[in-house]
Length: 426
Ligand code: DHB
Image (cartoon, rainbow, N blue to C red; front, side, top):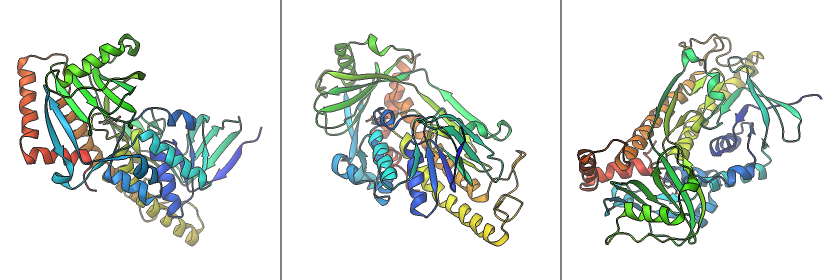
């Protein structure tokens, strides 16, 4: 069988929200892109994801003309509630920092982006196998794969963008001698449920008690999303419906506090926790974005928002690189472009043996990582503020109460939380 070859300027490995948003924004700037994805569109659409979008994420969707469903089926949240030992404090985002967040499931963001890309005739291959990325340290990188119909294909490009999620294969193409993997694990996980019930409260509730963490989130008028802290090796089937709701109610407080609305549980999952950052996010003709480059624990729902912040930083840098490349090709006809033969636009510093990383892509890595570390800090901090550690004593819990009071008891503390949660301006 002969291999089917296509050529684009940017080949994108991973058709989740980060990859699709990159593809759409590049297309809007006249840059050709093609996307491959190992999962089916249906699988991604029906995998539960976090439900909170920062204002900047919503603005990107609106600017790319993919945001209409967020406005019609999403809900603007102008604040959130922090609950400690049953005592509640509202953080008023609008009053504190003039921004809101939107409740809209991130798997629906994916669906909107995928539909837009397909509607506009963008090249995408779902359910591919045998993916390999070749030559990221050369001027002619290439993706090879077998498509869902069994056809062997290859996509030749000037640049590869790796948006292939937390188990990224693209990340490993950055040689170990130039890559630092920053990683920590946590001694707990989240037990997530979807249930058929009305909303318990108008806004999200992040709660801590001596029993640990719980989060009351929402999906719509009839389906709700909730989480509570559990052991990483918990079997979701080992918890009965009553035990789950009794536990969440106990974290919220049983006297005078919020009364949990219960209903049939339609999904139970255990979500692992980790913090990871890959440094740098670019190498040769490869750039990583989203979970491929970094993973945060779920507290605060930063994952997709951070992926979109990467894309905001990446797209202008890719445009600059492609523009230089086109100009260079028109002038010399060599086709190697910036970073190819020591022409303008490169910086020294690579210790890998291949092509130098174009300056614009190095700048992308630096800009994106600055925000990534702010988000890593917030997700880590909020996780530790709201979770119970395996070894606790009365001091640990009382100290956490002090930290909680320092946040909720002053507008400065509240503003810190609001600024981080709603997403710092770029
Ligand atoms: C949701 C998930 C989160 O991690 C979070 O911080 C807020 C909401 C959710 O799934 O709705």
